Amino acid sequence: MAERGYVQLEIAKAEALLRSARSFFYDATEELWKEALKGEVTLGTTTLMRLAATNAARQGAEVCRVASGLAGTEALYSTSNLARAMCDSFVVAQHAALNEGTLQSAGRALLGSVIQPGFP
Image (cartoon, rainbow, N blue to C red; front, side):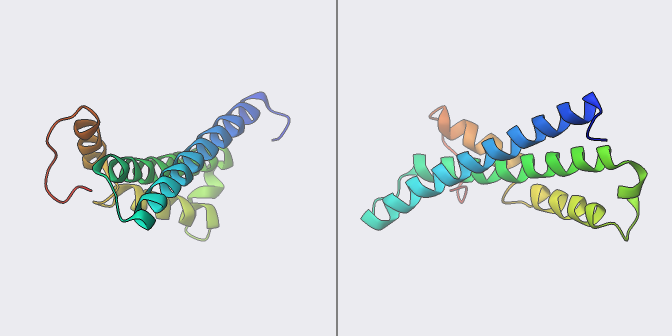
């Protein structure tokens, strides 16, 4: 499979998605931690942290979907570790704290609009 062009393309895209999401998550975590140590956590920083966490969950699920697609029908069996990882990744991405609603709230906050109570 490693010699197939479409596999190479999908693996490269998945690697970029995962590394980008990880980098954003770690950057937001570091910024939030620095503010927490000073006792001055801002709405902007908590918004970026929630956005980074949501993005990491969604991109992780997408990477699992790509891997499962490349694995073919073998990834569909309940005994497959990849099937379990894919299912678990979807659960995380669909969690109320990391779903589409958090993206909307983050967008509102980034645009300077009032956000729903409890978002950050």
